[in-house]
Image 1 (tube, rainbow, N blue to C red):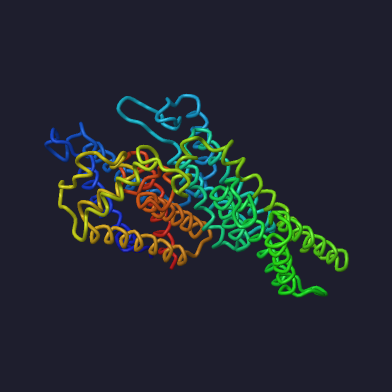
Image 2 (image 1 turned 90 degrees about the horizontal axis):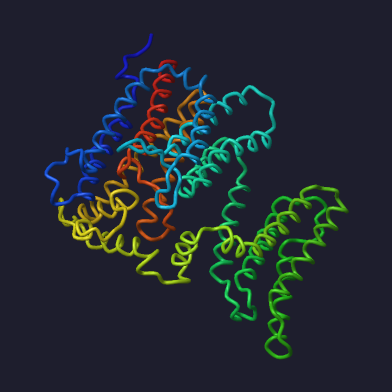
Length: 485
């Protein structure tokens, strides 16, 4: 017998959602307040407009709660295709707004289809994985198809010049790990980011530590060390040379080169690093010939690919990234100072955060907020308003509420009996977690400013409605699972 509606709905998550709506609405009023505004309900101002979107979102939530879960399962691909077509259409009809072509403007209202692509992609991934639970499809092919599903909307959003929204799709990687993706992929991702940062950070032609290419030199050595550790961990077939001897041999080459630089002749250490790489690759090739084990070839590909990438990272930075993206990365890495440009947002944000002290300056009393020192303070940088007017205590409270929210989603996802609901739940958790971590990180100045909202707190009808749809589909799926428990 089915339980009542109220018994099946997850009350802690819904309560947190309502709390976020109320806190976010008040926060938007604080951040966008001007002296001419007489009421928080005035639709001529952003707090009033946000209230309208809150009403629309609540209606959408009620509608979703009354839809049978089979609808989301059966229509997932149709929803996905419809959103993809809408994204393509947006490329041609969207006006240029701050360099981005991602908004469809209808009178006073504007809609950003990229926000809705998140739940559409989550649905189709969940549907695909639920089908594969009854299929003999290989793990590699499953991951490849999943990446294609994610990459399609991500690529179109990149064409719209909306990099921040596109990067959010990387959050689906969390779901892939839950479903069995190898940790080796995580290693490759972290290594790619590390090499990119090292190469850009130390790309000057000034000789440091006997090399003019310190970033590439460090990258090559990191790749060699990781390759040696992989060799030690997995290559147990007729091993004739222990890993510690490989590392000692590389260290010996550097010792000889250092002494030569010190007392005999100048040798750029980058050539020593390349020599060590060539010798290690020849050794792996010999082991492959001796054992015919494919893993040796995989290590060779790993080494060659990442060393080639380390040499191309600077080209990617100079020729592929947009100028505003480059300057943000350079200021974050300390390569340039731009206090009136790229650093202005984060500097003013940090001033606002620190000025809040323990309990904040009080409601509508934040000077940084009221004097509009922080651009986008009611959207991407809304958290600095929380910190200035609510203080450290208020900021910690909001952060703890988000941790509780994300933890609860993980808990419910693990409790699902069906693959569709579990996979969708982890997609939801990944999206909310990515938005939360990156938004807080860029406000604190520890991450590049990529322009993504803080869920339920940042002003924006599209994001609020999309987050609500994303969230309440999961709530509805969870309610259905409780019927069968």
